[in-house]
Length: 212
Image (cartoon, rainbow, N blue to C red):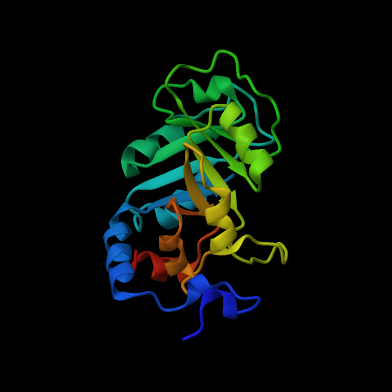
């Protein structure tokens, strides 16, 4: 059997794992969390809330920062379906009672967010070491690291090995994001990721979810 060094230009973590590692992977399955990043809460919840347990929703309200927005419908959905919700960029909205966290996209460089309530969970996105360090300085406790696998947005992706190298020596939690499907999801168990993130999940992912 060839070693990793003898397999050129290949993500050798895709090889069949040992029985001990597979057993360990099995134990991790119940712990994986589902993170949905969306700008349309209502449609997302209608499609997915009854299918998933342990659901986390990141509401990417990039352009809509009006503090007079009526969030009653979102809060009603949250109460009905028992999901966690994170608000993007708007401190006033994030401070509303029953909002679980604050999301900082990778392109936001601001370090301090004044008046953000204490003990709120801050999460963010990153693609490299520089952005990871920026998110940590911004107070993020969970970081979405992407893209772990190839997707339709481009040919650049991390793969399992680079994902693991990027997450070394950081005292935060990571979530794998980008290109995850039924054919490659098992590789997630070979990373430090606490969950699976995506912006859209179709039937392929629903099939995958039954496995995790």
